[in-house]
Length: 229
Image 1 (cartoon, rainbow, N blue to C red):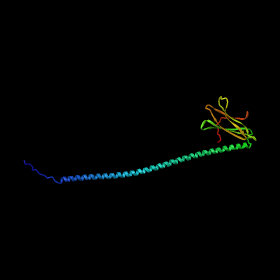
Image 2: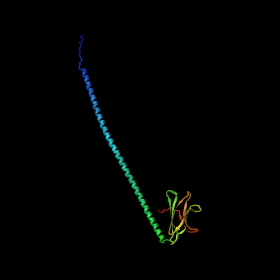
Image 3: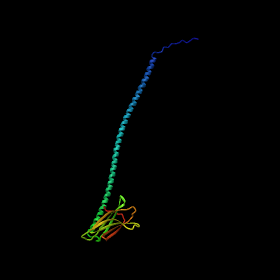
Image 4: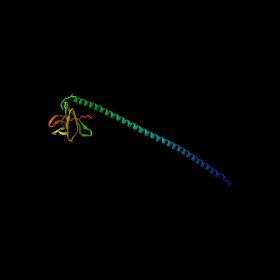
């Protein structure tokens, strides 16, 4: 058996250098790629941040404009509501004034007829107006109109007594007020009725006296009307 001869191979001195160079190139490439990717991402991030800031500014501007427009709209609606309410109140006031003018014209004509002697010459308890107090359900205002058509040189004098009669078994009317009678043509008396908790009015009686002499009297049913203002 013949042994194979050994061959001695010498390692190339450039082999390690080539390997190191290859590693350096690969490492450099990876570093360059990493730096390039980071720069790209940083640019993208910067662009996104800039765009986000611009959008935030735009959003803030739109929000401010929206608030201003909403405030203007609210003010417009409020002004419109105030104008509508004012118009409604003016119409109501105008209607009240028109009604008042009509009532005043009626009263003026009535008083003219009295002073010109176009009505009865007798002393009369002409009318009674009764109105509820909106702020107190147990309180009422009244106005009594007295007239006489006689041509007298002096006023007729005496006393005016306002009495309140009740429903049920209550025996006597309650005297509300006493006034001095002093009338030549027209006299108006006004007052307030304050009801107790258990009182149920049936009528109001107006009595005119001169001393003990009864001049006239009239009974009015308890009926809420309106007192001309």
